[in-house]
Length: 215
Image (cartoon, rainbow, N blue to C red; front, side):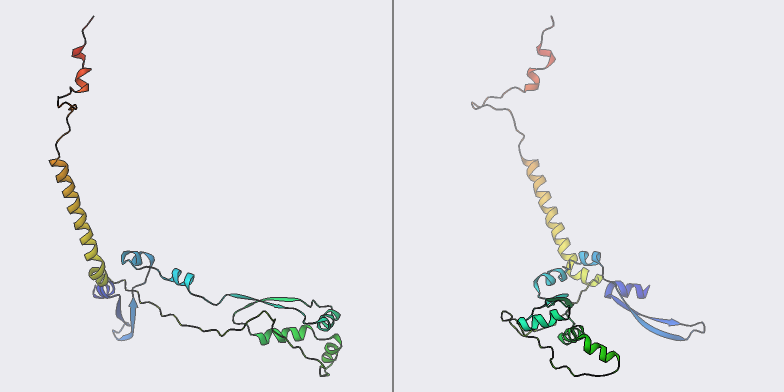
C-alpha cells in the first residue's frame, strides 16, 4: 500500500526484492508510465507534433544527382556501357566518400577489372573527380539540440494545479444557473393584453365545447 500511494502521489517509488531466506537481493525504482489519458487529465499539451511541424529536421532521404561535366566525361562513361546520368536516394548518414567509392568501382574499365581478378594491379591514369553544379550553394548546417520537457502526471500535481481550476469553474457554473433560475422565477407570466390595455380571452376558451349550441 505504501509503494502504491507513493507511485500515485509522487510518480515514483522504490522497491526491494527478497529471496526465500529473507535477505534483500535487489533494490529498484518504478515510475508512473505516461499515457494519453494521464496527459488529458493533467491538461498537458502534446507539443511533439507542433515541434515537428515548426522545426527544420534532417530529411530521411536525400536525392543526389550526377551529370557529365563535358562531352569527354559523357563518352568515357558511355563507352563502359554505363549511364552517364546517375541519381541516388541515400540516407542522411550516408557519406559522399562511400558514394564516390561505389561509382569508382562501377565505372572501372573491364581491362582493369580483369587484371585485378588475376591478382595484378594497374594504376589508373584518370581518377574520378566530381564538381558541384554552378547553381548549388553550400551553407553550414547548425544542429540545435532540443530539450525534452518534463511531464508531471502525479496526483499531487493534479491536486495543486488542475483541481482548483475545475472547482472554480464548477462553482461559477452553479452560480450562473442559480441566478438564471431566480430570474425565471421572478419574471411575471405573460398575459394576452391588446394594445388598448384590455384583456384578450384565451383562444382555448373561445373554442371550448361549451360555446357551441347543440343542434
